[in-house]
Length: 360
Image (cartoon, one colour):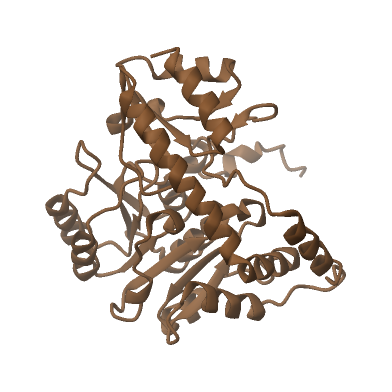
């Protein structure tokens, strides 16, 4: 008997079919202020030295599966506690996925305040975990009582706290984060993707709390194209996560390039300082605009709200002016009428501010 043709989509999980894919808009020819990238390139001498380093790479060989040289450079540069373990990922996204895959079981929950980084919710769905969102207050601060009540009820296996938070840009109070770590029965991930612009960290607390891990990325300080994330946590936990990590997940070009960049970390920090200066200037300019309310930011972007019902029009007007930023209005809730702009180079920021002022 000949098998009847089947529709392959019938085999795709219903919850996956219901998702919308993560959308990255085209940016060719635009001033790109939508993705929290560092707008600065390396000095010519540094670029030449990097290319010389790359000439020595054996592309015909698999990369070091543990990226040992890169791990040691990360420890030295970032001040990773000596008794903590490191695991590297293809960006932070892979590390979030590794955590969820290692912990996911039917009935287990991933919890996060919202609005926050959308991949927490998406990866919870991918791995079959229940997702519980706890709304932030209207000013984007943590509602600690509600968070603690949700933790007590859901007993989450994973809690994610972006520090500073994306897309709101604010830092949660340290004592609130500590209270959440202490109250959570599972693992708390403090996601410090924007650490270079915030100046505050929980990295030195890894080991003080048995359920705390800290996540970082090199994307925001100028290495977005390399796709390198790192997670620092207790050795016993990281040893289990290593079982889920795919072999050779960090390619040889990323390993060599990231090691080189960290040897010149002062250049990246100087660029971060310039971005923070521009952040202050942009924030002041936005606050002075009628019909615009900008939120305080400890990251390399600024969230701002425009007049009710105006976000889509403002976003399109900026596109027409050649400026791409992130329109968050469609998310609804606390992000209604909100847009997010990445802090770019001074000339880019000037063009953004000039175009925005014509529309509000």
